[in-house]
Length: 257
Image (cartoon, rainbow, N blue to C red; front, side):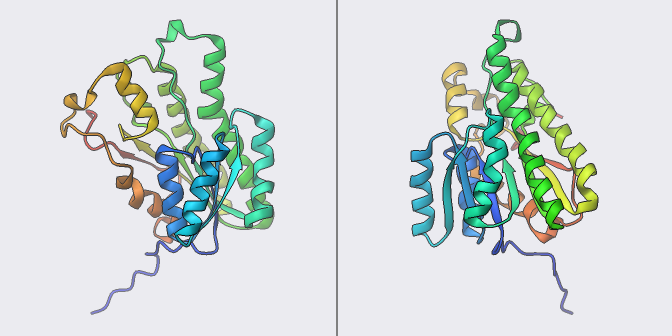
């Protein structure tokens, strides 16, 4: 007997994706994966020189990518980026809200300026950008997929001087759940990924401050960003057509339940 799996596909040809924080770390990995699966990828971050080098690399490998400078803390830039991308690459049907920053401070020692920055980048930006993408899709009566990158810290705060980071990532989880409900009738799926400790520039900075945290983990290792490829593609593929408002934890057993 032959069974059919009509929804199983990782072919993203014909789709245009925005990835925020694409100049390094998880965002860079996500961008490369989307391009490898056929999507036209808008690489966004503040470091335009870095983005242009990545775009050239993806293009040389046979993919399609273009660099767009974006400071996600700037609301004017957030509102302008979608039409800029669409003019160059076509209607945005995929958004990966990946950009984020740590606070690396005890709560009572944080300046108001740092509080505002962490809130703006980690929570305000994905909300505004999701709305900008969804508004265009709704007007065009077109379906779309949004994936928000939260953190296992949204569920398990270890008390290591990142209280506001934990709070904002919990906000990203609730943002994902709420917008999924609001946009379900438009067939815009909003889901999320909550990574544990994965290799990245942000993690490098944490390790400098805290030492080798892997020795306290059951598998004594950091995650490899490639271990998230299948989850990202699942949330962007027809296989997850009925999945919206879900945040998938990927933490390698690092945190207790």
